[in-house]
Length: 186
Image 1: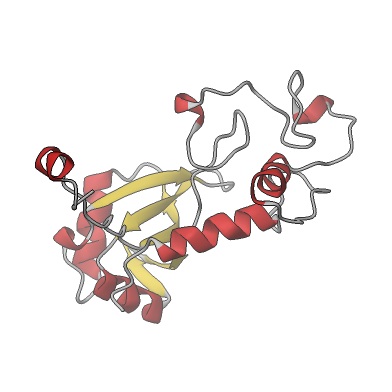
Image 2: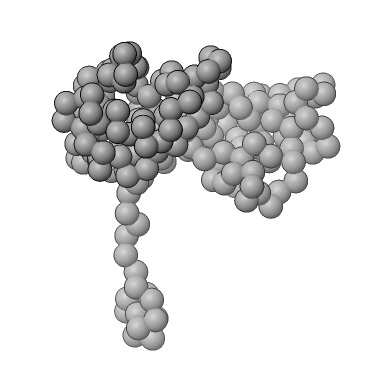
């Protein structure tokens, strides 16, 4: 593109920037607001500042009244947090770990988008077929992601598992891709 004068005048080609690493902090009271969470976290933990967290969001917890916060941080802060293994928050010491979850659609069960942006038909996560949900599925497990990867890239992934299986080869590949697109400051 850079060698084509007409294209280089209209467009600029550059390497994509890597995303910042993310950390999940477990079991925060769900009544805590974003501002209070960031402020308290920065005030009670040495070396953390409010500006160290460019973005954050909540995840639901299985524990009633609790949630998990995912924070995006600079590489230096990321490494500091992982070394600590826990952070102070109000009267608690909360566990944390790296947040590595590829974007997944829970409508079509494919990676790379979420259900609100999905153009595909709804499919069963158990067998990959349309027309029913997992609760009504009586078919053998068949991962839609591994099946598509095998067809597209001539791979030989085992497909006898659900699309939501944590040991899915397609999930492992997506997680590796996510890691390669993350700026760890190395």
